[in-house]
Length: 93
Image (cartoon, rainbow, N blue to C red; front, side, top):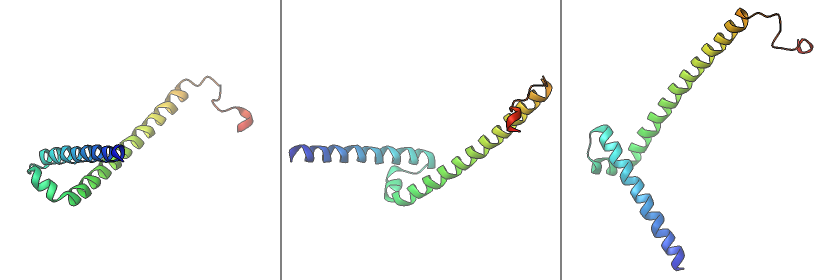
């Protein structure tokens, strides 16, 4: 029973430290005090989630654009190097 209690206490300490670190970083980012962030924690987490979703969507769009540009670059290189050898075997065409 003592080991279980000890593990629960340590888990609580670590979780509490994580919440405090999150609150401090969010307070720095928003310019508010840590107490205000902690008192409004559920809404803060929702805002953080929506901000992260926006950042991920933007990153995906940038990645897609880069992939399209890179594919076009490969196509140009293959067209310029037209050696008569097809990158796709004839039996697949």
